[in-house]
Image (tube, rainbow, N blue to C red; front, top):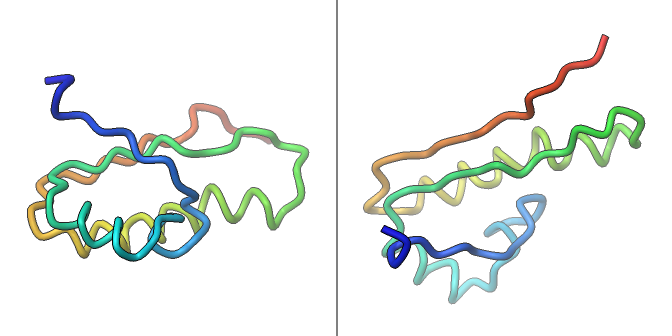
Length: 84
């Protein structure tokens, strides 16, 4: 199974999750599973920074996942903490 896992470095705050267009197209042809565990649990950060990684980022990743022709699973792992 490990031979099938390919971590991708990028930035979910950017379109194409921070990848160059050519790489994004190639990956979209092959990927079957997307796992998102990006998030920030720092509760004293600027509002815009938290919004980008915890809300806009997953939306960007979902937009990319919609381009994946062989996608069978999109898994989003949310942060485990909440703040009053």
